[in-house]
Length: 163
Image (cartoon, rainbow, N blue to C red; front, side, top):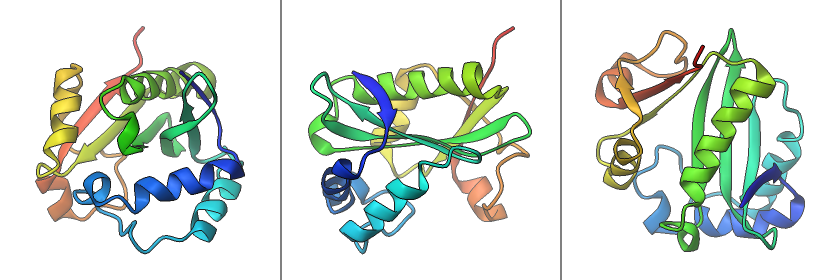
């Protein structure tokens, strides 16, 4: 397993998870309407890492399994995001991708904290974060773009740089 820059060859497999209802049914965005062109546009935009970092999580043969992201990096904070193909779930890719992108954020981008939220109805994600020992918190001040209702309804998690 490793993280690498997204490639245009990843687009069809990215679209696969976007159109898999088992994967996206508890997510906020409307992924079902996305097209191959949308995926290619996202991959092109992801080459600029000044504000956000989107990396492919790949297996040992370099096959795309999912995307790990640090979004809206500013003032020492970023919002984490992850998406996985169904075939990669339960095989350690999510855990690896999450730990590695947080490490990269701290060590290579100088972040002090990484936060994220999840809708409580997304039981699979809540179990994953809790099982892996991530700490819940109140919505951080750095969480922008969320309504007051969303800040109250979602479960929030945070990891702070040690030392």
